[in-house]
Image (cartoon, rainbow, N blue to C red; front, side, top):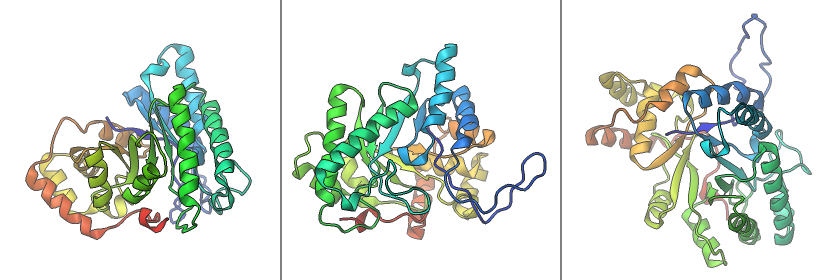
Length: 317
């Protein structure tokens, strides 16, 4: 079953939206919109979604906690009914976060300082979500984006050791990484990690694929999660002639074809949507399958190499 990615969207400043009263919305805004989480997560849970994907940097965890608290109080759900993934160890984001906030200035930190910061972040995540444990905790990035700092490996290990400790305590049922290349994982283990990451969450879609990372993880039993599985959305991937042709032939939406492609490759998919229709479509990925020929046609689209604009995992030391 796909997860609902909660609160990780940005305002698209190229569009003009209106609310139901016809008043123009804030078209200059660029940033996270955690307020959308209340409605989208409530809808998703009522439809049967059970996996919630979030992160400290998304600023959506308090909203998730509020929705879950209401469900827990009413008896509609128990903690065991939901599967929560969160992420920490994210560098400062100019324009979106401020230095000195909960996001550390990683390139300036010693390993001991990283340990203290990640322990504090872990506690904050549990507090914001209002739960005693998460099902998966991930290191969000291997380093500050595009950083080649010589201290990155030592900082990663310090952060990973915190996750290992929280795993031993049961405050994380599993631990993993995000946006890590095979080299980052290999170095982590050689530097003294005791637990192999159980998950690697990476960008993946019909247009975007990290084949070497996938082969490495598949060969070691590291589960793969795909974020941004619909790429840039309707402006590109969902209008692709190959995707739309397969969708028409099966009576499906293009988004369903794009997500099913990843599911058949072994990914857990993490689509982000606040649309009730899209949420319903995303749930219905297991009532059909793609043929080998269809998978081959879709795999040929990897050459487009079109992602959402994030740095390559290979650009960080």
